[in-house]
Image 1 (cartoon, one colour):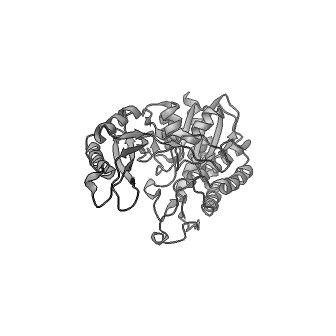
Image 2 (cartoon, one colour):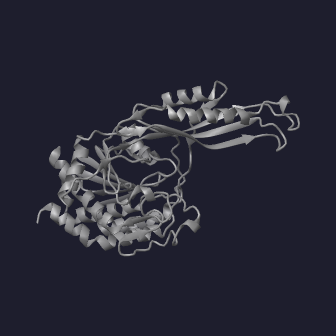
Image 3 (cartoon, helix red, strand yellow):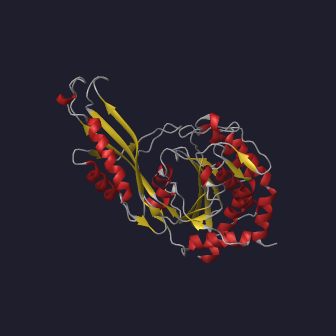
Length: 397
C-alpha cells in the first residue's frame, strides 16, 4: 500500500474520532480572549495523538510539532469563535456539538474548529507513519483571530522566531484550494463641533451633521474603488457612528465614524487613508486604531488594525502541490479560489511574505451564521489532505 492509500485509510478509520473531537470542542465556548479552557482540552487531544512536542507560547497559542526536518511547514487553525447571536435563530443549542451521522453541529464547527479537529487527526496519522521527511511540521492552534486576525502569527514569527517556508490556513474552503483574499483595515474618522443649547442650534456647530455628510461621501467612495480579476473589488462601509454632547438637549460637539475597509490587490494602507480623507473632508481626523487586548495568559501584543492583502500565483509550488494532493486523494480537480473574509494569512503572507494556501472543511457561508455545521466527510478528507501534503510538496521542491 502506497503512502496515499495508507493516509486515506487512516483518515477513514479516524473519521469518528475526528467528529467526536470536534463535538467536544464545540461544547466548550471559546470567544476571543476566553480560549483557555478549550486549549486545555486540545492539549489533551494532541498528547493522545502522539505529537512530538506540544507547548504553549507566551501569547497563549498552542504550538505542536511533528518531525524535525530542515524546512518548516505550518498548518494553522484558530480556536476562538464569535458569539452565537440570537438563540432564537438556532434550531438547536449552538453548543450541543450534536452529531447526526452526516454533520457535526454548533458554533465553531465551520469557523473554524473543524479545521482544528482535522489537524489533530493529520498529526496522529503522520505520527503513525513515523514521518521523518524534509519538514519540521508545526500545527498551530491560535487565539484572538476573530478579534484581530494575524496578531497571533505576528507574535509567533516576531517573538517565537518560527518562520515557516510554507503555510496552510485551515479555515473553511468547502474543500477548495484557496490562494488569497482581500486585506482589510479599520479606520476611525473623528469630527469636532461646538456645543450649544438644543433650543438654539444655530449657535453651535453640529459634529453629527459633519459625520453624516462624510458617511454619504463614504457611500459614494465605495462605488469607485478599484477591482482585481482574482480578488475582486475593494469595499468600504460605515459600520458604526457615535457622538458626544453635554446633554440630549444640546448640539453635538463630537462625532465619529467607524469604517470597515476591504482592500483588493494594489490597494494599500496609505492609498485607502488618502481616499477616506478626500471623501470626508479636511476637517476629519483619521486614524487606524491600535488593538491592545490582553490574552487569557495576561499578555498583549499591540498592533495597528491594518491587515494586508495577499495572494500567491496559481503555478506557485505550494498551490500546485495543494492541487496535486487533492487530485491524488480524491481523483478529481479541486476548485482553486479565494476567501471572501479575512484570515491569519494577512500576517503570514500579507505582512511576512510567506507563501500560503487555504484548505478546510465546511462551507464559509455558515461562518458566523446560525445553524453552523460541518460535514463529517469534509473532516475525513481534510485530515487526509493535511497528512499527505508534506509528502507531495517535498517531491516538488
